[in-house]
Length: 502
Image (cartoon, rainbow, N blue to C red):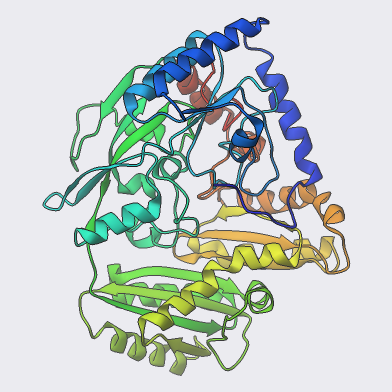
């Protein structure tokens, strides 16, 4: 799928990233003979068959630029195997030729983790043709899928079997399970069901030397040594290439309640979260925090969106409950009435139909697109302890508004697990280029504050290329040494998605 266009693409601050990565590849032994490349291409054609190797620029272009079009690389070719045996053969051929490999799923990542460098030596391995659901076991509540399955297709397969696969995020119509696993994707249901890591029981992985680890175990208890699958989840393809997974399923809820709630400040939202958890327990599925400014961008740029409340407020919460009790909506009404009486909530609206549920969620889902249409923005995917979210927002506001007059703060995200998309949009009177030049300075302020509050500079998007150096800045040397040791042990030649994470 060709990545979407946006007005904030091709930012100048990212030009140096590809230059750095290109120099990294020069440390690898490489042949100067075109015949060696031709020999590899012949091998790859023989392995994957017709249509499985792309070399023409017009065909490879969609695979060489990240979703936000801020990073563009080059590659020897794009290879699309059909099964794990072909993946293993492709990896062995590339390893023998000492050529770097870049695994790629739906190419919807936001940190350049699936984009090759500019050297033109990499082989992009696309999992798009490995898109089969291998098995569904409703008694064990598991589904076994290949890495190229689109997330929404996995959700539908589960629903057809009367089950729920709860991972849900904005790119679910195009992102692939392999990418979700490689970045440990989160989404809107983490507070109840956990990240992708928590939803995974087993993996099938092709190692950097071409061996296949058959770890597709459907067990919830297996205490026989190291839990190897955890090495590959969140590793962004730097330790091996995930080809299939056994994922957890859950009972399909028969009832749902969704409310749009207006509040005065983020502190009240944290209080409301605790009250909702106390009242509803594990039935509380999503708790999204949204500030006024990005919501106004939605009403400005996205046709057909309607205001849920009769008054504008500084902050909003989108709250969702899953249950099998049809009275859950009435319970939500009772809960919100009590919160309004206690003056913790200013106003609220509860969806009374599936269409109204869809409309409320569409406001949340359109936030990133609307912000892009408004002009250049600098995006942060951060997490802090839930108890410190309000402090982070208030301190960040003081620091950034004191730094740049007219800067527009547009935070929103998953308050239930402390993950905010703390985005900042350019002042109205600035150009995109002017604001892009402020990226390093703004990142330092935001990330230093996150670190001071015991948080993480990447909550669910990964490190990729864009945040690789940020991680090195904030992690301890001991932690970095351990990560490098794992990388050396599994990929001593450094050929598997080099330049990412480390």
